[in-house]
Image (cartoon, rainbow, N blue to C red; front, side, top):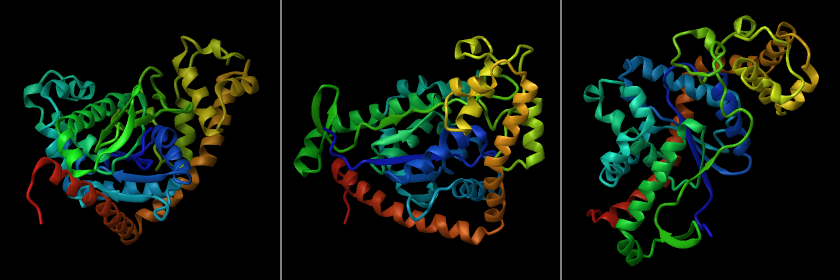
Length: 355
């Protein structure tokens, strides 16, 4: 039985605008979780350096992402909300993990292959080691669960591999210091310092797809702004994007099976289901047999009703940077307490001298 304190960690990069997929797949779930669990939510600004953003842009984006967190409903009194670079222990633990992880593990990471492309020799070391820093982000707080999408499962598996190798490599030292924690790994009960963090994958909104191509995930890096609904979009823009969203000529089916082979139709039905906290079958019962022109009008009205209050609150918060900075400062101080406790033990485990 896992005897680690149950804790959730997650975060987002301050690059580009957060969009509907981020809200339905992450933020909305984070808000619900904070009423049930011990939650830590981070703006991972150190990760953003892998694309070398303009410094002023990074500062502004960090505040904008924080504003989105708060506008979506994260309560900085219930959860710890902070930016990664405030807590120096993230980088410190990442170096320890760089020495634990194997180069072969990093080379197999799908995201590195996608982002480095054919010119791998010119990719930054930071891009290659990105998953090691991600593991440090999670394990610095000894988080037991991470809400993730399918595209992040491989990174979480690597986090577990790093945790297991650290626990194995230093098992004797951990035992001698008396800081091991019992946990279930498969059918065995083992002792270790870091938990085997579990993914939290659930709900109908884990993969919101592009409005222009139902086979591709909605992304803030897509060159077409019509492919996504940004959380900063106004009512008119949201309505226009939904009206222009790609569909097919057929009517809406009455059964879920009728969505097979129709990725754009499936995506729009899924978005409606996620916004109404229901499932695709329920949406099809209401709209089956109707044309997408009618459905899109209802979807636009629904999206505007749910997203407009978030947009308005985001804009208000962005205009109050002192408040945002105060939230991040307070969250950083609270996160640092947990982080330093972990790193003090890690330094002892690996044999670093410290006062």
